Length: 167
Ligand code: RP5
Image (cartoon, rainbow, N blue to C red; front, side):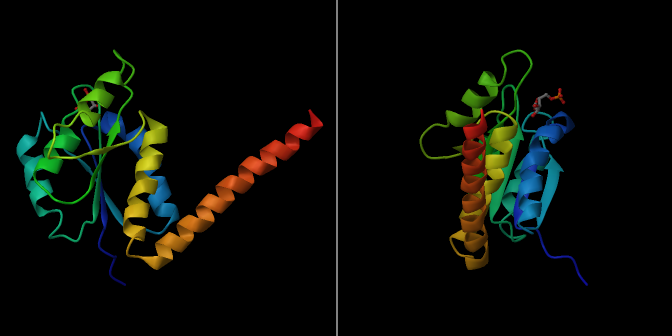
């Protein structure tokens, strides 16, 4: 059987971002959403990044998740070439613990938005969930799965709370 086409692109500036960005892959996989993963750099391969962004919608992509660190321009550059929603994930950089990445991604000037999530793995996971929520606007199956996901999350916290009674 032919493989389904990806609907989410997970892109990142370097292979050093992959361990963190795998958190976005994992959550999409658990919802059976097809995704593609690419290394594209706004600085090192700017032309490839532009070509990718210009063609993403035509390929059937609905959401782009872009992780980058340091002077992290990838999400903003990609957003400048497409009207697809772009979610930026700031990598936890060595020198400034990700504050540089965060500000580079979140502080987009008026006109070109990038939905920015938290620094590091929590952000990568949330980027995946946010992509699912965007897809869920027009996909009932995904929005129902998200309802269940939230209920399970609440139940896991209640379970932890109940176990405190034995402390
Ligand atoms: C950015 O530079 C990448 O997104 C990465 O977070 C950072 C460092 O890249 P490497 O030097 O590890 O390849 O473009």
